[in-house]
Length: 597
Image (tube, rainbow, N blue to C red; front, top):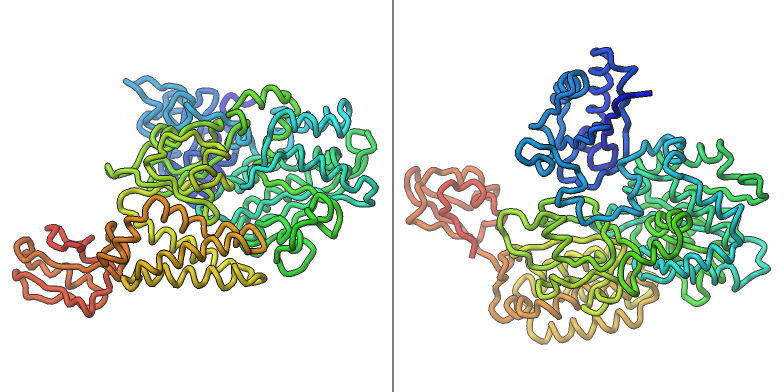
């Protein structure tokens, strides 16, 4: 029995910041101090507060050390683990008040969160099945197989009100009911997990797979029992090496323990899971394209109907949910439909995980009850906008979503509210923008992404998004007209109405939402030939104020294009023909003599 446990974040973010070296150093220092029989070092998944990684927690005290460096480890071992003195200077400062350490749950980032899908992330070692079992892991599967009928399981999900967390929000229980009943005499059915997660700025599903892979395996087995399937597939992108490795370990351990495979819990129920790796095509996040890719074919969408519940993978009835949806299911089975139904809003039950990024102080992973306002997420949990800047908009749903402007800052976040203001929940990416962001440029960024990711199967998406991007590019270069804005809006609705799959149908959303809330910025680009945010290079010029310039020559030395000239201690000038508008001169000027107009 260990007296202390040192939990070190082993998610992708902290790993990229050197958490593996921190683990190695902890183990070496613990051994050097003769504490190997008393202190255990545990590699966990993501704790959520990615902005402060690498993160180290020491239990039983619950001390939260942030931005830990390898050089800090010896002090933590010698002071905290050996002498019992918390190293206050290394603590997450919000846990320190007047030299008193307060619980992590009472800090701004965690206070308003409710962890259901993320309940085990950062708490257990995801590579040890016994740790998952110790926190009620696989109890839900045992309950389902020994106490419930397939119809009972489906009814529980219907009563709970769980909606798919992959974007559209379709009721999970209804999806399972259709897969069970539409083709009752099917000789084979399948359960699939969408772990492709291609939205820019999204890392929710990756974090669940890295921190709690067994919860997905357990939920997929429950789905298999409910619809009558004996085989599952997890489709995960190859760019997630840590998630893939932990899934492989988890599947192997579950098979070894008899929790996957033949005759699970001695009930006669068979279910196994295999991995399929995606090559990074965004379109493979669409359910029919994903299944086509699993089949070994080019990842292109298929017309619907028939829907996957009737004819999905290998033309057999199939259930497909994303990682976060599955992560909720064991807790619903164990705690009951009423428990889950009591969280959230009338039409959007439970919690939602968001990857909080962009212009925000507390970049990271958050899980909040449905109905939490955007203001609470950004100001209370996210810590507000850096550098005293003003909030301008938040993009939800990635390339498929839309911008939420400050006028809707207090909107309760749920499926219907976001759709009502021209955005969508999406898988959970939430990118925050401040006054320095150009909304025309933001729309262009997301559209460029969807143009690149279009599979090309249907003309409205393949050609339409390309033409839409060309108009946006023209506007950002100061070459647009008012007629272009009207043409662009008309094209958006055509693409939405005629594209084959969700990628094309939602591709115009960032354009439409920015036109709806920030049309004045489009007008400024077209009529005034100015970018109000000073972002679009075609509409920006750099000038040196001769009154402020001291002639230090720093700007001339840093300019990659040789566009700045002048003698020492004399005012310099910028050759606008040569200027690349890279901004390097502004960053290096100590006298604020260079202005962007």
